[in-house]
Length: 270
Ligand SMILES: NC(=O)C1=CN([C@@H]2O[C@H](COP(=O)(O)OP(=O)(O)OC[C@H]3O[C@@H](n4cnc5c(N)ncnc54)[C@H](O)[C@@H]3O)[C@@H](O)[C@H]2O)C=CC1
Ligand SMILES: O=C(O)[C@@H]1CCC=N1
Image (tube, rainbow, N blue to C red; front, side):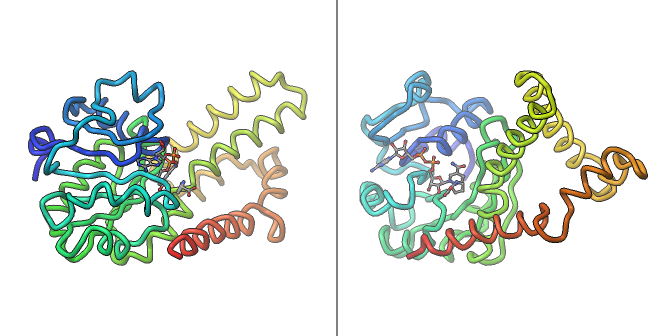
């Protein structure tokens, strides 16, 4: 399967909210024809309506790909609409947290090719990272197709086992939210030190974006990059003595944060 086939047979999206829209924005930006995309969503956003994709209209009979992007809690109600695509002709890609491959196999029937994926919202600007794992029916070509599609919105990593996806969800699926909160916290701390809110937010956003870009591209480890900022007995050292406290510092806090998210992912399986 290739993008040509997606253009020819269509891509159906079941649900197109925040995550679906982030992915769709990336695909449209990457050159996917809006006419190839068919969205089923009872509550399409203004942004979605502003695109030229087909919304809540007739669906293709055997689309190349069906992307499932509804909340796990809506799955039972939404998935039966896709049942006619089960059995093998259409490749299913689900981004739903918590919903295991076995639930799709039960709803869509034996022989259905399913790739479970965990993306994140920086997909909207082509900077996402998505982890994927396929079921037994999904062959190498299906994983290649999923990877090609998801590469249009950022990086793709392949998992060895499905249970890894709970930890992935806790780290990179939910991770952007932690970083956005860190931006808010950094900006609020700047305001508390006397900066105007706009300036503090500008500094916080640019610092997180710049540090992220440096961490991703530099040859040095994040640890070394941190050391490079830290002059002996200087300002950073004073700040890090608070942030790196063994008890109550960022390390145990992040450990507990990711553990809670991963535990919720496991819980959603029911
Ligand atoms: N938001 C994020 O950062 C990420 C979300 N996910 C997963 O993506 C999925 C969607 O999450 P969000 O986009 O955040 O939620 P959302 O609430 O923004 O989007 C869900 C969409 O599904 C639609 N919907 C509800 N019932 C439906 C039905 N019966 N048929 C078709 N569409 C229906 C809603 O109208 C909504 O537009 C979830 O399963 C979530 O676990 C995965 C990774 C990251
Ligand atoms: O919060 C959630 O459940 C979804 C999954 C990962 C990010 N958002």
